[in-house]
Structure formats: structure tokens, C-alpha cells
Image 1 (cartoon, rainbow, N blue to C red):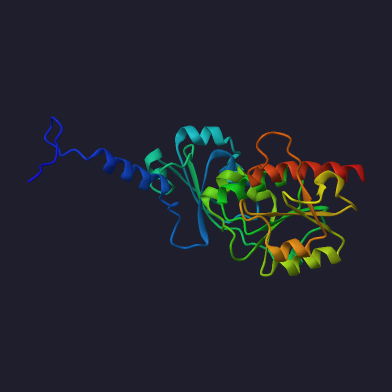
Image 2: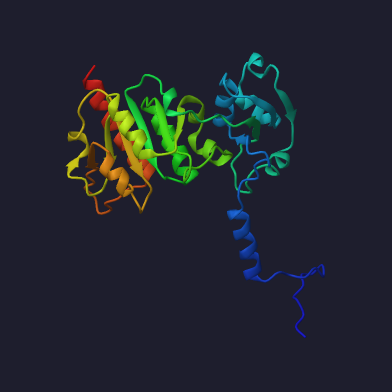
Length: 275
């Protein structure tokens, strides 16, 4: 019979591989969001600050360490009506991912309600995501969209991430500053956008023309697909044009969030020239 090795205190030692398996489980464990999917735990200083300042965000309670409260630097009026609990960091650890960088602050709030396409506000720049499911990528895309003045982010009801602490942290507050519109049929939504004056441009590595020479008109909707798969065939045949990002280096492809930032910059420059 094989006996487990013990440390000097007599406690059995785990094998090296058991420790690695346990560490892997901790790293891949999903966020500990509440059972009620209408409630999210938002964490990180920028994320929480912008959520608290968003008048449309329904907030429930704020868990914060003393140090983080000082770093939030919020006017007391912004916290009016909010249940604020001063806690130890471990209390926040228990609510979020084991590896989440919460910076000592967590806001329990109701998720924002995605809007239908009929709620689209007057804007000249949109982003459309074709089945991009990674919340880190979608959050980073939101951040770039807000930075370049995009008026809305359009996704599908299915095959798109719902609001979560992970997505909000990657967006670094941008979630509170952009309209999120969801549609059931992406091709139909693209056709509707075309009918109200948007040039719909799909990014494709094999696009016939460089992106910057493809733009025309005063309203642009950029359409991006998931890494690896790219745009679905129906999306490719529905958009007005397919365009590529010319990359001169040895690596010819970019992470979708990086490609989006470059495309937004190019679209913003084009639209600015039309003013």
C-alpha cells in the first residue's frame, strides 16, 4: 500500500500534478455572478465609478475597502441612496473570479437592458459584431467604440456575451457610455441600416480593397466577425462592401479588438473629412 507523502507537520502532501490541476480549475472557474441573471457584480475602479455615475444604471449595493473608497473619489451625492458596505478584500474575492483584479471595489447592480434597433439614436458611426462571443474582446471593442465616438454596438441575441463583470472590466467603464442594441437576424438588421443611409463595411482579410479607400458617404457601420471564423457567409453577401486591413509585418492578422480599433480610427478620419 502506497502512503501519501507528508510535510513536517504530518499533513499529507498533494502531488505536483494535483496542485497543477487545482490551480487550473481556479483559473478557469467562471465568474461568481448572482443566480439572478438580471443582477451583475461589476468590479474595478473605472468600471464601478462609471456605473455609479450612470443615471440609467439601477444600483443595489457597493462593497468597497477603505483604500478603494478614497481612490473612487466620488462626490457623496453620487452615492446617495446606495447601500455602501466597507469590507475586507476577501469579501469581494468571494463574489468574483479567483483571478479578477477588483481593486477593492464591487458594485452589485441590475444589468442594463439591450435595446432594439428601433431605438437607434442619430449617429454616423456604428459597430456590428457577427457572433463574437469572448467577453474580453467585446469589452475591449466597447472601449474603442466609445473612444472613437461610435453611437451604438449591435450584436445578436444569441452567440453574443451577456453583460458580466468580466465584460464590464474589459470595457473599463465604456459599457455605461454606448447603446447596446441586440437583433435576432443580423442580415435583416444590416439591410435596415442600409435603408437609412449607412454604408455597411465588413472587415475581411481577403477583402478586395483596403479599408481606408472603401469608405463613402457620411454614415458608416463596421461589421466584424469572430477570430478564426470571420464573417458568416450570409453577412458577407449582405454588406455593401468587404474591405481588408493591410498589415505590412510578418504577422498578417490581428486580434479582433485591435483590428476594430484600427478600423474605427480609419472610419473616424473619413467621417471627420466630411464635416
